[in-house]
Length: 363
Image (tube, rainbow, N blue to C red; front, top):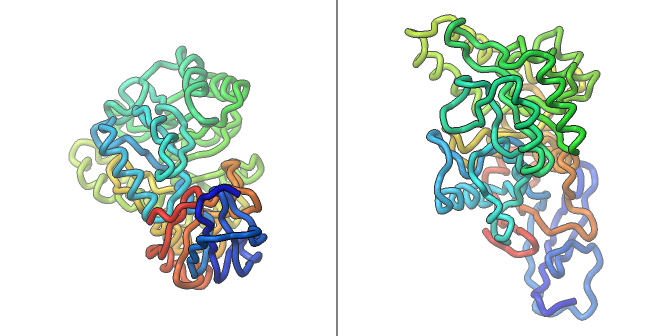
């Protein structure tokens, strides 16, 4: 044991939804369930402890205009941290945020590299914009740059059509996903509409973001293939305002966006009921503020997912899906302490008592 102070977390330690311990110890930044011999200078924190929340769709280093300076990215990461989100899957960013990895006071990030979109079919200054013939090469590039994920833009408004439509031909996504898998990366895709989903899933995609276009025909396919969704319901709440803004120019698109919004809760509940893995993600960093993971957990519950399962989608299950530990023996001490049991009342998540990152109380 080093001379670092020992932290004791006492109360109820939610190792899992049904596994509860009375205390844990943090020594050299790691969790132990055995009291360290000769422990001195012990700081005690009381309450209900959870693994650090997961925001599985977040964009650190990005705002509505594109990449942001490091000081802005730092504020974004600190906002997520102080809200209890200690693990972020960055689902596409033009910023190089590797410097965050050297900061012990900032959340851990799993990067998907930069978005890959069809030419003029996404938000300006966000993505690499390429044609289908170059898709495999760009997927390989981002697979090497990322942390085991690649992000495609699966659909976007087609201005000639006046509505959402798929961005890639089937053969292109099959080849691109195969290349990512060959390089050891998983692939996810932004998808609002219906028509890109079957091709992406049958091509072997691992996850779909938003997934508002799921139907009775495609939900079973997702369940059969084990394709996860990250619904980002706090972002889907913005669809009516987006539709209002685009109605004069693209009335067909606006009507479509409203329909997707109106059935958003039914879509998520149908996916969950069918056995589709569902995880918490906010889409913060584009137009939305950071620090919304707790609100997204509540949205999943509002959609009809049982509260403990909604909580698991942003904690235990999300960490396992991303290959990161929770509150296991020897794991990094990334945890959040609350005043009451979040399993009984999800509103507790909005008010962390203490945030512990790598064994240090940081908020």
